[in-house]
Image (cartoon, rainbow, N blue to C red; front, side, top):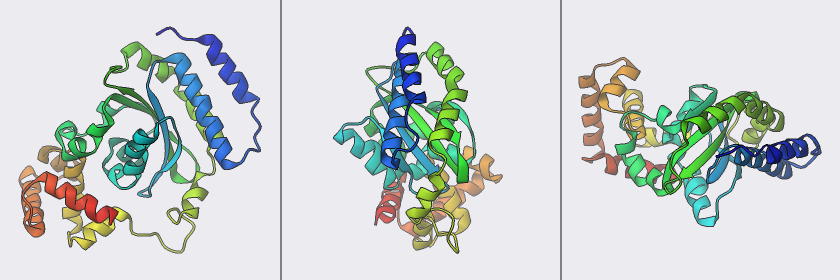
Length: 270
């Protein structure tokens, strides 16, 4: 795809001339539309979604281009619980910044996991990449560009071009979304309260009577990690991982990962 410099420079001119005293919703839309137009001038993609993440809190949807049906899958369902198993969310928890392809971040068994089959396959994406931008208050904003199966993956030259734009994207995001910590606090999910809440996921593990070690292992299983990968991450043997996993399955009266995911999501959403 050829870069549309005329559209790019018009977008930047409009952005620099935009008023800074707009209300929150208008500002979110203006910034999202600026990023959308800028990215479209550079590369081809089908949709964009911008989420703000803070610790284990439900992510805030800042901007997206989905129709009603896709919004239900990519935003409403995602916010209801699947985000906790998403490689992008896990990357924000690790504090990483930059631009990454989903397949760079996904666990070794992600594409054969029940999370992928049950939720992520509904997205019908060929590829997703994201700009990860830490902002004030321990919040990370992720600008995700998505290409559907009919469009195919991002070519190497387009990914390289987007990588070159990353410093500017990060600066724009930090300027536009500097007060997101306050928004999480307003929803009862951020800091500023007397004590930190127990996350939705942690409540599920406690309700299911799992130990901290069992919960850590089962979270990694649901994210798409193999027993070998879990052992490396937790510095325990593969055999120990398998023993804990068998114990959890016996404790919950299940025999498969699809049953495990079903129990997790049912309790998470309930």
